[in-house]
Amino acid sequence: MKNRFLFKSLVLLGLIANAQASEIYTVDELILISLKNAPELKISELNYEAAQQEHKISNANYLPKVDMQAAVSKIGSSSIVDNNIMKDDTLLMGTLSLKQIVYDFGKTGSTSDFTKYESQDAAFSNIQKISDKKREVKEAYYNVLKAKSLISVQRENVKLTQAQLYRAQQYFKAGIRTKIDISDAKVALIRSQIDLKNAQYNLKLAYALLDKAVGFISLDTDYKVYATKLNLNTLANHVKSYDLNLKDSIEFAYINKPIIKEYETKIKSKKALTKVNSAEYYPALFLDAGYTKQKLDKYQLLRSEDQWQVGINLSWNLYEGGASSAKVQKSKINASSSNFALRELKLQVKKQVTFDYLNLNRKKDTLALSQSLMVVSAQKFDQAGKRYEHGLSDYIELQQARQGYIDAKALLIVDYYNYYIAIANLDNAIGR
Image (cartoon, rainbow, N blue to C red; front, side, top):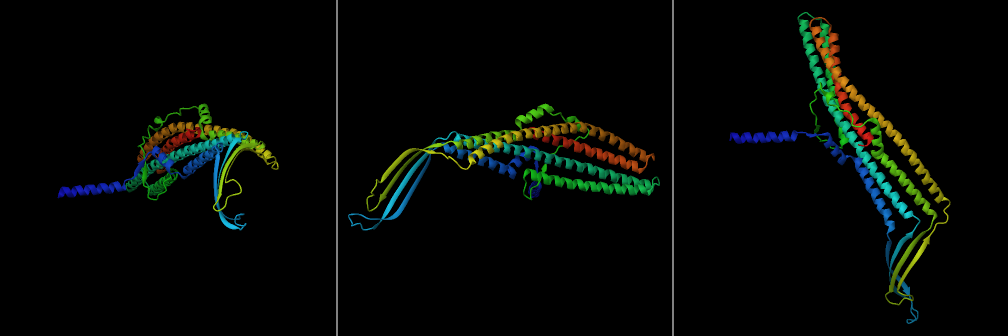
């Protein structure tokens, strides 16, 4: 009985622990979730699908259009046999027609090209949004890790100030130090507690931004991000240089960044639209064919019940108030504008890549210095503690050394995670 009770208790505790456990996600897992959840990506995907359907619609112009009509009419008719007496009758009629484009001076082909490029435009726009979403999730993810690590620093700060308060109280009891040291220690403790509380709220805010980036809309979502324990003494040693130099990064962006491909496709679509509008000057030849069958219930028709016709028709708009010319000129202007827009975009991309590349290298260089600063600040804090213990310095010097150590430690953590955020920004800038 005891074993059975123990087994049931362990099972129950396991179920409770499992119910309270939080999901733990890596950054790659969060990115995959965001690609499924993000509303803006769903909208972008639907725009791409709509553009594809528009291309299918334009390609349908190559194929014949077949229409069928059927009608049942109540009519009045007379017959010589019946002394021309008007009688009601029912007319049954059915028509089958076919219309096929024969030649329209490239309008159909150019329209197909235009919708094809518009579809490609939407595809590259969607890819760019995916790249932006990856960068957004990475930045939010590293900000959460940063906030978590800063909480640890502030907790250490609270412990250090508590220890300093205890030491100041003991020195005062022993008559070695004055009461002002206790007051200073209490002020420092309260400030460290405030900093800890702010750090804890900053983590909640960081999770809120991550929720938005990933697309967690439920209020019951409970999860944690995967984090490894940091060795602050060797952080800078694990940071590697970016695998592309500045020149290669810019050239990579010109070739691979989705938004540049999107603008290049816009130029092609504008040129195709110019051809579509230019074709308005010329006629279009159509093959028309039709078959009609009609029948009266009571009387014979005066004309044949079955008819068919086949012909070549020409449609040519000779004048519409200069609208055709204006359309052509407008499309040419838009095509020229798109060329300048692409050039302006490349300048913007070059500027952004340069900025992100230099910022990444700055983070890398300052990270090594921040690590050295933390080591030296820790040594200074230790020395300040010994000086204070032997009466060689006042409490203010000790407080400044402690705060300098805490600030240096926090700066190292901030620089470390900002370095990975800088990598995410540069990857996005060049189109990775």
